[in-house]
Length: 246
Ligand code: CA
Figure 1 (cartoon, helix red, strand yellow):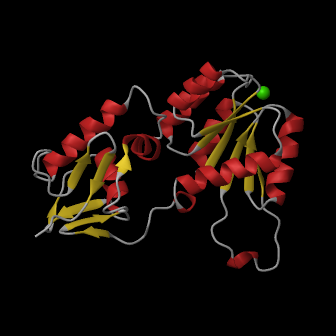
Figure 2: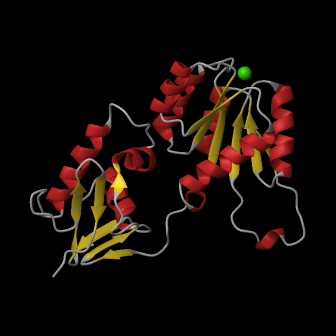
């Protein structure tokens, strides 16, 4: 693995967190060009030329986002994505030479956050990187302050949630779901948005997953769909979290 630090510019020490990008690409020419361009655009870029080297690199040093070429010499790109997802939830943008919708749907189902069809320019890749990081919120960082909705308190830093001071026993996914809704009190959130933002999945087929987790969450909050306190289902639209009215 090679690390290519971002250009040092005057005042760069005062800049916000610079995203660390891992580029997994076997074509040396493309790799060199993208590293150069992305570094110029202010990213810190490390690179690997095989899937296994890329995976090892992520285990050694976490990054903010991975750009993964699907056509790698050692492991099929889709298998590489599956292996990556088994060890990390890092955002992934897949790059492929094949403009094949089935492949795209498949990689998104396997947990890719976005994809690009080759050939693409560095400006386009940069835009996608920024969009993915923005979508995942403030460069992937959780909000530092606890979210309070009525008697419900969700602390993203300690990953603890309490209701009227009583700790809620939540699975990691239930916590993420509750945290996502608590960050948007009173706002109707669609199941599509929840699948994309909490599960990082495209819509279709898995929407029952959201319903099931919402019902578990509802039970842990001690309420029912028929008599909601915090979790309100808006039929055909989505769900919103609000403080109960007195
Ligand atoms: Ca390739």
